[in-house]
Amino acid sequence: MEKKTRLIKKTSRTFLLTGLVLAVLSSIALYFYTKGLLQDQEEESLYSTEARVVNALKNDKTVLSFPPVTEIKKVQHIRPEILKDTIIYDPSQDEMEEFRELSTYEKINGQTYQITVRYLVVESKDILIAIVFSNIAIFVLAFLFLFYFNTKKNIKLWNPFFKNLEQMKKFSLSSNEELHLVDSDVLEFSELKEEILLLTSKVRNDYKNLKQFTEDVSHEMHTPLAIIQAKIDNIINEHSINKKQFDQVSSIQKHIQRLKHLNQRITILTKIDNNQFIRVEDVNITKILEEKIENFKELEIDYISLSSKNDLIASMDVYLADILINNLISNAIKHSSQEKKISIISENKTLVISNYGQKALQHPEKLFLRFYREVNSVQSSGLGLAIVKKICDLYNFDFSYNFSENQHSFSVVFK
Image (tube, rainbow, N blue to C red; front, side, top):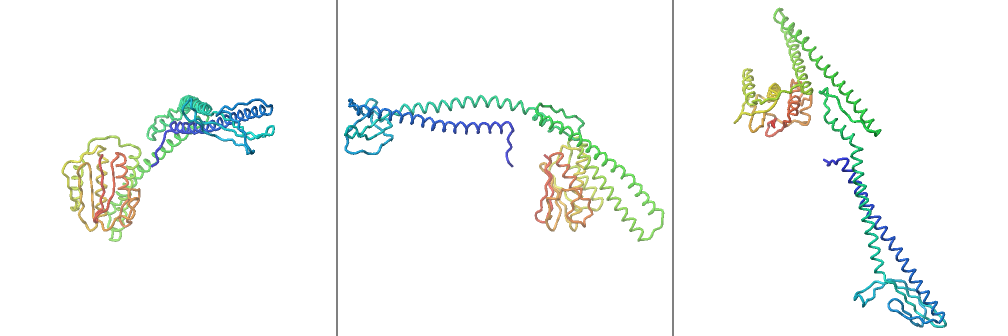
């Protein structure tokens, strides 16, 4: 997962990188620009000195050589002008010094001269370096000053956004507490605030309407189903019916029971979504397991074994704990082949329920989805494991499925 960065830090980092790049580029540009100006100045000085020497020679004035600054030699042939950098030993400093050198050839009064003029460039480089470093120092100081005030201004500018974001994190559909959003003089932030208030208000209204609808439907379904069930019982008990009629009535009873269970489970899911199970206490999961196994034995389901060294205690609603255990065991019974042994292991905050299976599930990733059934032949609402997953998510328990050695295993880790 890509690492996220805070807005202020990201904008500040961009500002820093931009400033650094500008500082480096401007220093490089200033270096070459200043170097070019100094070099032009040096060459202008060389040509000026050379012109004075030529003028003096033309006027038969005595011109003395001052090596290595100025040298005048008589030569036989005229050669092209040479402008270059050279290094000459300076006995006064006992070191090699860099000079800019201009060598020209002039024919004056019938005599050919080589005029060499040199200019010490060491001081020019010192000036160049001083200018560049001064530019960097000024740029860095100005940049830090701007960065500080820019960061402060950005924090103040974005403060309403951050405060409103914190309020949005606390927003809950099940709570009637109003959002206290901060207004801003920035038009976009102000519009964002109004849109958030409008959206949250609409979502809450829709949520309340849907919640009310679900509760009403669940409540209204319960009474008609009970009446239908009672009348069917009366038909069976008070009237003489043949086998065909009995089978049809029995089928109706089974579907009524399925509707009752479906209605009950949808109601449970709705209550979990609405955070209506707020009571939390220490529940003895091992004790609930023992009670459930005894109840199933009364129904002649005696192939369930429990292995537990210590009592497994979990902090949750006791009613949800009962539903969780009942759904897991019922699921194992429904999908167990040929009444094979169902194994329940409880230890170290972990509950594992395993039942026999010939092959692994084709779509285990869909196992906890509502109304999903891997095998259509099994009479199931497809909500049992969805409720278990919802309960585990509510309390941050780890719920997982695994298939190994012809065993379907469901594990719950009670953190």
